[in-house]
Length: 178
Image: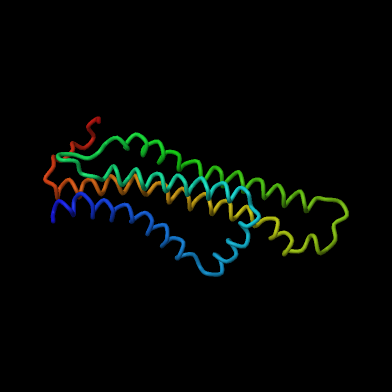
């Protein structure tokens, strides 16, 4: 039973933690804000780019994390470690992509406001919000994907410590080079 727990149950549990965390963050967003966000991203290529790349990166990291958490006799499968490190570093891209979308939407808003011959309807708060909304959604998409994509590597570190202690493996020396 202990072997089953160490080799299958705990790695699976730890890999589900980032998925549950992402779901909890999404559920914590107020319903009206989520509805507005989902309406706005329909026509936002930068949001789709961020969300697609983020989801692919997240799924890849979860699969690698599951392998990295598998106890193999006296230690873990360390082959995924390099990839997990690189992919976790890639999470830094998402806020930057969101920032590009933010700047583009702000420029679009100012451009629309500065066009000659505007009607009062085109300069109404509703029209300004319509042009500016992609700035907010791109920022939100970038931050959400960054958060999701730093969790798997962190979970591997925590999960390995717990699994190692249950398996009776050697405690790694803190700060030692690998």
